[in-house]
Image 1: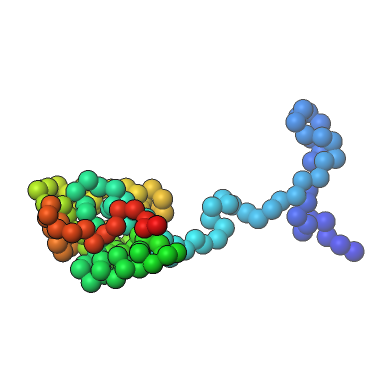
Image 2 (image 1 turned 180 degrees about the horizontal axis):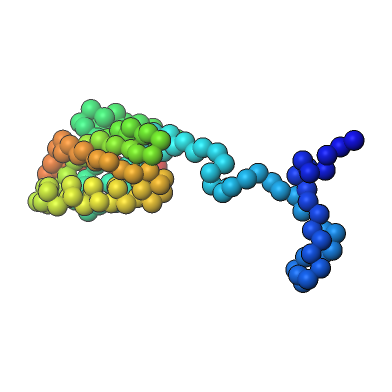
Length: 161
C-alpha cells in the first residue's frame, strides 16, 4: 500500500476557481527561490577582462601594464594571429561576494593624474559591479609611466597587415 500524501503531486479539486480545472494534477518542483538553488563562481580572469576594458575606456589612459609587460605585449600583438591582451596591467582577487583590483596604467602627458585615476576607479567599479554582482572593495592604481607626445608608440593602434 502506498501513501499518497508523500508524493510530489497534488490533486486540485477546487470547483469555484475559474483558473483551475477539476482534477488537474500539478507537480511541485524544488522549493524556494530559483536564484538560491545553486552557486555561481566568477574566475579572476573574467573580472580582470571587465576591469581592463573599463579602464581603457577612460580618456587619458594611454596603455595598461608596466614597461616590460607592454614590450612583450607589443611583440605578441604584431605576431599574425596574436590578440591584444585586455588583462595586461590588471590583477584581481575574487572572493564569493567581493573583489579587489590592482591596475597598472600609463597616462598621457598633460592630463591630471588624479582626475584620470578617479575616472578609472569609478568606471572599473561600475562595470565590475554591474556585470558580476560582486562588491568591489578596492581599486589600487599604480601609474607606471607618462606617454610623452614625441615618444614612439609601442602599443600599435591597429592590426598590422
